[in-house]
Image (cartoon, rainbow, N blue to C red; front, side, top):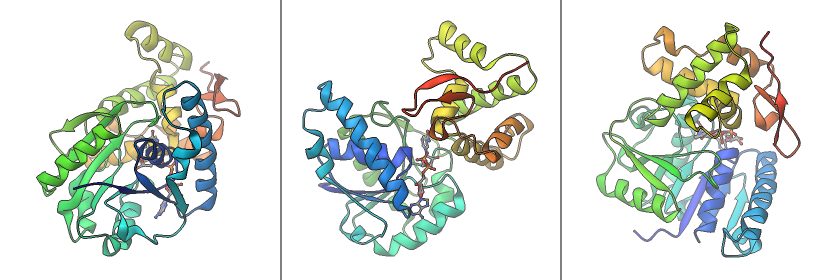
Length: 297
Ligand SMILES: NC(=O)c1ccc[n+]([C@@H]2O[C@H](COP(=O)([O-])OP(=O)(O)OC[C@H]3O[C@@H](n4cnc5c(N)ncnc54)[C@H](O)[C@@H]3O)[C@@H](O)[C@H]2O)c1
């Protein structure tokens, strides 16, 4: 299949990054969100990111040329002309199912539908589809513009040929493709980092260590550029809560994987990490870390 046009649904931090790298790779991109404010925020973020990447020579075209390949809108008009549709909406099974039911009748016969879910198995998401064979998991990592990793997930009903086309697309987008062999909740990376983030939050709750010590320990001792609390802030604490809840629920609710109370509290208080300016750390207007926000006595 000759892929030319890609739709990205969702203009949060992931959708914005995916739309940008697809345009950088030369694809025409239809970027859709139900919320115009999210699209406006994404435009600003892409502008800022491309400004930096182009000035460093990391992108061999002008910012304006890359941005000219992206069309933004709040409706699903034109979805039927797309070769690939990548969804990056909220990490909730009900939201993704409702979206699939709404868009599937609009898709071209040959179109591949991919999901950027970070935890939900293809088997579960495909329950809402008439044609489950065209669903592939494309799990990008944040920040998508610079993080080279991409997990590709094949459900038991995913068409082998379409999966290979999705792997090829991942490489064309400049990613290192990691093929997940089994469609388990959280796949590979989020089972590992999720466990570490949950344990780090339990250590904070029990007062066993400070935010800085946990993250610095992993940085100094193991070479992690960001520790688990910094990673959680970067991903968004609301996104983490949904992701941890999915893994915990789909795994049969084991005690050790239960989403921590501190995480639930912070989300309820609107402290969502970098995107709201406060999580375990504080952030300035540019999203740069500006000190610790959660003090452990
Ligand atoms: N944040 C991360 O670090 C990260 C990493 C990997 C994967 N993911 C996954 O990517 C997906 C998106 O995450 P995010 O952090 O960008 O989320 P986000 O909350 O920042 O953004 C989600 C966007 O989807 C839009 N949306 C919701 N329902 C919609 C619908 N029906 N139609 C159109 N737009 C809709 C919302 O308006 C919002 O702008 C989730 O599945 C998440 O688990 C997130």
